[in-house]
Length: 243
Image (cartoon, rainbow, N blue to C red; front, top):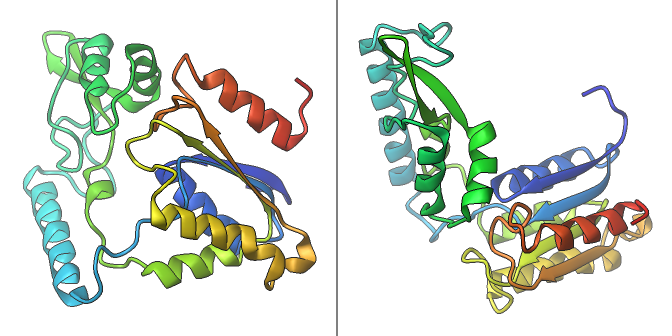
């Protein structure tokens, strides 16, 4: 982007990326808004790095072999009906309608209402031509996103990244989230690290950290009908937009 300065907003895994960007490009991120995130997923346990690296590389080789065997290459796969039907990195389950896909998404790892699932499907589905002028739908998520990468930080590494952010931060969490809860010690420690930035190396920037817990909010609180207005209100107040 050519913008010299901007407000950055992200949710969940996208928010993890926002933390990283804000730490690396301090001069460009004026304010940071993160929903349901207090930083990157760290190593589950110390050690075992070489085994994790081997597992990661073996999975990548498996995907690469499937790609070659499908007759495609990494540069230009055969795209049919807006999506490759044999892309090994894509989901294999096909749905007859957007609503069918949305109902399946309702019962995913982070459960959502049908209305929220429909919103996710609007940007998360692609069409697949199955012949006889018929199309079906599948989720466009790349399987590689779910691979457990071997290059992960430990707690100290994550905290170092958070501590170096100089922008004001708004953290929006859901009180009914299955991912985080207010008593989680990792969450408490990371919020403390972010709030303590005023007394650390970033003190000259006057950076502040604000945490808002939205009652009844789930992991997708920004999409759910019961909580979206509350999320919007705290975000607008944080960025200075009149209600």
